Length: 282
Image (cartoon, rainbow, N blue to C red; front, side, top):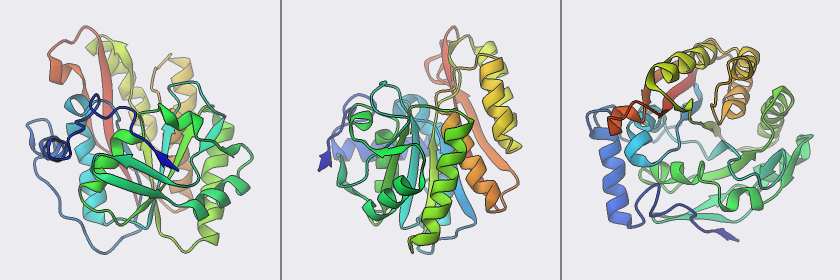
């Protein structure tokens, strides 16, 4: 089974050459980290995961470059576990695309079916389901950033329809148990945008709340603050799972590398979306 691109030509270019140029610009323009990293051939498991945004490249690509830069310099694992929110409403509490390939203009990425099937067995909520992934953009837009540097990796796409304390712990625990049974090296990628469609000052205030929680690795406060302050961060459950998993491996802080909004690109600060990149590292 091949999962066909859903937002190619919209969120990112559908022409391979133009797509690669777009990725390069995401690393080198004035809002980005400034240069293109070189892939470390030796994977270092001190970096347990990253958090990156998933909007159209023109808006969130420069911010995403900060997280991907560190990921590339750290070296790629055998398998990326990519956690995303569910924007379509299709699927289940935790929907796992557990076999086949994902296609982008840069080629196909193989799903780690062994890891995926074991993860489903260890989870109380996860099921094998493709429907949640068919039109969901928040994993797809990240794949070309990985493919630009290598094609020697697999993925486990996990779409979270119910983001709460129970599913966050369940995902982290199932990943931990699966990793103990598999020989593959892994890293987690949390796909999320922050506050949606508020004025710039409100967005910065609300984003600061969740970014402080993430920096302090306080997954329970993160979930509580999202609800308490009505923060429209779409992937809070993906980050909470990453926090729980990373804390178990000895990570004490999430380093927030970059925070921006869509207004920094468009110049319109009346209604913006917040973006941030961060790394979970021992």
